[in-house]
Length: 435
Image 1 (cartoon, rainbow, N blue to C red):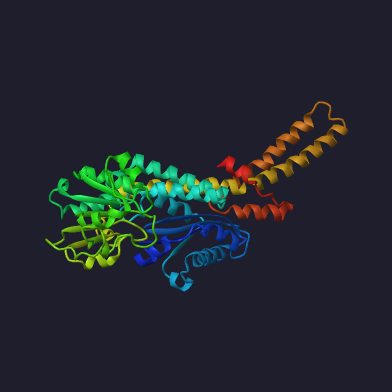
Image 2 (cartoon, rainbow, N blue to C red):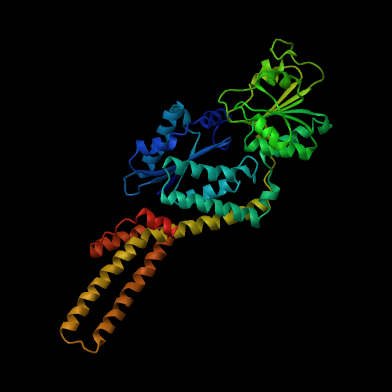
């Protein structure tokens, strides 16, 4: 059985999401260690959501509850957030609902800005990380691979991707109301990751030309050379920050704020001993796209400084464009239904194989006896093989129909009750091949 424990901008406060975003990489390994019924785990952590996807060994009594409890305990161990504080901050999806939820997430339907594109890459990287840690499972592999396929189909056949805007684009559109001439802005970009590249491209689309970059992890030179902008060394960071009119932070390289009042009050020598920023109202605009937050909220109290952070940005997220969203959700539901039907059919395959093997073994035994009694022309054998086909056809079809309705366990139970047959569990290699 699949489970998803999800905390997002729809269920949790911004502060809680920020604390969860600091989650170390050991949550998934801890999950497998804490509960023997957990067969695999993939953790998806972004600026606006934290989700744990778990495969639970279904025969275990109350496996779902055990799986959720293990997720909460793993989060507590990794982050120090008491389980009591998580109450009410998360939802749980189980069984057939998991696929539709992940497919919607991967397609941007559950994002702050519907249709934003960054989440698709984050979903893929979550699976890659689980593979590296050895915590994935065949069913989770299939789930995340199908999520990427569903996302691509939503992008190709609906207008959601064109209607939706990324957080970067939305933040700069909000900034546009404050900026008369982008080419006159002195821009400092803090961070050199994927968000930084998107931010730089969007800045240039708006007409910004005076752009510098600072990297807390020391990658500014490489990034600047690649993109044709100016690198800021550590010793000049505060001076350049105080002199910039637009500062955009988008790094996950630091768990604590890397831009604070001291940087914006720096003296000409960069010592931080100067006077507070003055001049015209909102002479500096700071956009914080980091999670955890990159900017000390206290900068908003400085004269002449305006702070735009993720919490503010999401309040300005546009209403969903209903037609595009409805079309996208239809694609997601169809993809989830297909995923579940295929999975259910795979779940009864061992039982169907066991049943057919049982009938065929009885048939072969009877054919051997017929041959021993003189069935020289093979008529008895032919009749027996025809009868075996008739006997297995209807139960096989019925097994797949029950599986499609989510009732495959009824076929397995009937098989054991009537014939005493307990199907073998499929191996991982077989499941991967059939995925």
